[in-house]
Structure formats: structure tokens, C-alpha cells
Image (cartoon, rainbow, N blue to C red):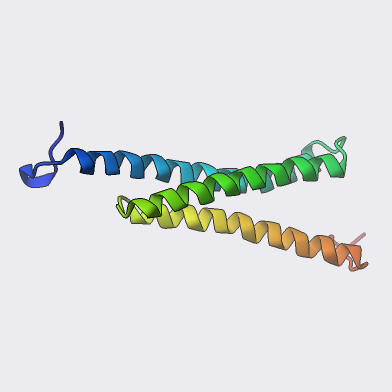
Length: 126
């Protein structure tokens, strides 16, 4: 039974809210990390493991993105439903991390679309 600062009593409800907020915040970060890892895995499969087919690579990476986005959004909704802003900076940081994965995937979609229309998006040939 811990006490907060200046020997203020901590209720059981506050302890439960703190524990739940911390768990959902960790879940947010896990989902955001999966989203970023999905794009990193795309690069790994494309350059380090060239024997894999493009379809398999894309399916695996998009599945990882979908799972990460689901975990992130679900935990974010639960965290906000608690109305216990335990660590606002970490909450915003998870949003920025997941958002960066979204930006990477949007850029990948743009480059893929441009390449499909015949625009040379790679480095210049020598």
C-alpha cells in the first residue's frame, strides 16, 4: 500500500486506475512499435532477403501493420476512457510513433503508385 506525495492517502480506485492506465499505455506503445516494425521489416525483406516474393513480403508486412494498428487503437481507446491522464507525454509519444508508421506507409504507397505509372522513382542508373 503505497502513498502518494506528501503522505496523501491513495484509494483503491486510484491504484486500480493507475495500474490500468499504465497497462493500456504499454499496450499503445507495443502497437505503435509493431506499426513501425512492419515498415522496417519491409525494408529488411526487400534488401536483406531478396529471395522472398514481393507478394509474400507485402502480405506479411501489411498484416503486421494491421495487428499493430488494432492493438494501438484499442489500447488508446481504453486509456482515454479511463480519464486518468497518468503519463500524457508517453501517450502523445505513442501517437507520434504510430503516426510515423502511417506516414512511411503512405509514402510507400505513393512511390508504388508512381512506379506503376512508369515514373522512375529509384536512383539514377549509371
